[in-house]
Image (tube, rainbow, N blue to C red; front, side, top):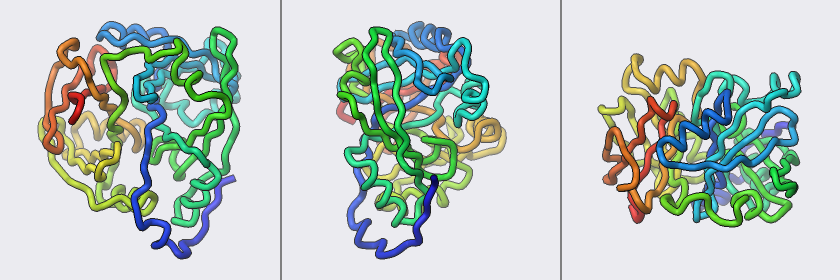
Length: 297
């Protein structure tokens, strides 16, 4: 059930910005093995994580030392037709959208649901879910959708583990790669930059953003303080970002990692965002936008 509470005594709740800690980011596609192969061809190896308990999807992941991970998600070979049709990312998976959603770790989901509701943000009651790893280990967690867009697309969804989180993040009992420290930024495509900034500030108490235009990528950017959120509005109607919004709506359009060994990877372009360099892997080979910034940025 989705609930909304009118804004009551809001200001005391937002005297400080909420710390958003990335749990994982999700990449959607129609063929999980191909997604793994495309990523591996660029030097990043993923591990199969198993089918979800929704009887519709399965996943693979690249886990990082900071505990965050990159999830690849697609439909199982014989998904339950109804569950597949009702899945919030169905269109994204079928359309090979790439960046799809993101989640933040939450120690107390019920408390955060209450706080967001009091801030006037649409938020759903927690739902229990899970999956079984290929080695038989059962994973259980709960999530809560934030906002009225498809789960985790504009706002991150909340996630809290009932089983040990390291079993979910580190199926190999260690990070899948040490070339990258973790996911540092989620680039969210929006149609109205100022309106999107306003919604995020209402939800999380963020300070005024730093803005920048990147003509090479055709985007107008807003960085929300020291958070992982970068909002991106297309500069023109004929651009990759505008086309993406037209096909899939607002939501993650790119992910940025922190690289410990940037020289190990071939990049096709570099940009400077908010004073730091972002290197981009080949989106033609990968099928979506993945970048990295040097460690310590």
